[in-house]
Image (cartoon, rainbow, N blue to C red; front, side, top):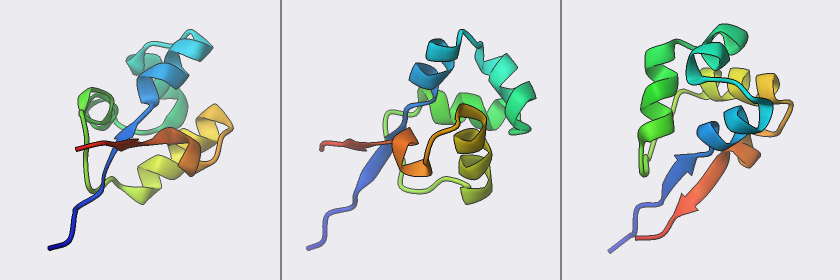
Length: 73
């Protein structure tokens, strides 16, 4: 049986580091607020929109991998 890997996006941490609200992050990145909020509150997910991840990484000036944190089951 294969184990499904889950990741959590570190959006809240990066936004807090910059002093931005999730709404400000949405405006700066061009990613919809509803998408950002979903990603920010999720305890773990299997899939995310790669286009949104690119925009967020670019906005924070980090690699996409920096946004991801493995979730231990």
